[in-house]
Figure (spheres, helix red, strand yellow):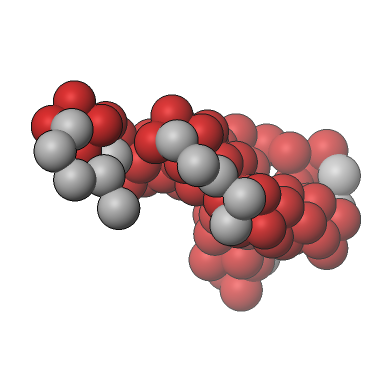
Length: 91
């Protein structure tokens, strides 16, 4: 996809890094948001953001666009879904 451009290949490394950072960062805030809103509303918002990130990633032509859609948006959506859904059975 990006033959002969090592700078763009190095940028692709940040996609997973940003996604995992978003999962754990927004996961910490997800517990508080679940108390303010309900678990169902927060998971619905997270699923919509996650789906939007995946949908927009299909239109990307540059690696920095993938960093924003896959890394930031999908990380935000997964973080808002993962933390509240894993702690909800304990409540």
